[in-house]
Image (cartoon, rainbow, N blue to C red; front, side, top):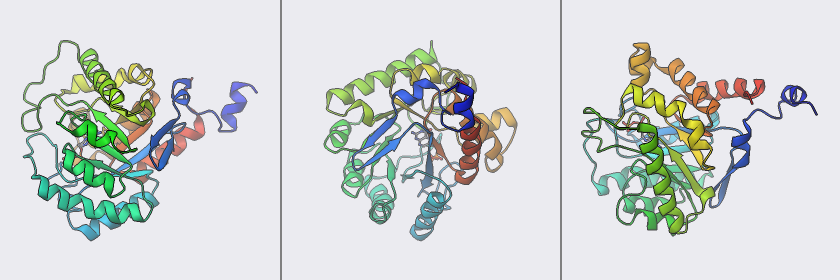
Length: 296
Ligand code: HH2
């Protein structure tokens, strides 16, 4: 069949690189990454940069998770600690109390849940409660974190962060931002594989906004095809971030169009997981993207 005919039938919307590594193994769950997947953000924190306090109440959090799934999310990413620039760390006890009861309930309903944490104790509890993915902004660098994930079958997202949330945006500097970020991620992936976490359980994320200027973020976004070419699944988290505010001059609650443009720019460059606040808008944009077919 000619390529144009395949496009018209809607059968071939993704670049070849993305089709090669099509499945993400999350233990009991598998995501077919031949089309991009939407990870809906659920922050059960009082201080997250865009939705802080909105879903701190557990009933509201559950309602929002279910709503995001109904609106087209493929999984829900629950975080109990804000990692916004300047944020204070949260005690393990508090993070467990915020996150784990929600994982219990949502997982029992069959909703795929990812948990955004850098603490091994929270990882272990989340996995025991049925989480299908651990999303770690510290790429499992805490002592015991790799082992916590390796002992289960869930997937893991390894993200790059320069420094700590409290200070990371104070004049971040790199000699070669793409080389350093990709080098770090591949080294962390190798450490995970050495501990028994298979490649098809690993997702890499350059960590937009985590110790990076606008220029760093744009360079990393442009270089996503290089990361995707490694064969690991790639996640992009650009939703409502400060860089989009710098480009558009918009406040955080007015960055939906910018977030969608950034998400599609990431998909065009090989990202297959999108971590977003605005699920229905992103889902519609992806539907159009898929209907048209991405350029080969
Ligand atoms: N961004 C945030 C938090 N977790 N995880 C991954 N893998 N990638 C990201 O880009 C990422 C992330 C920050 O966004 P948000 O959760 O909305 O804010 P806060 O950290 O203030 O809760």
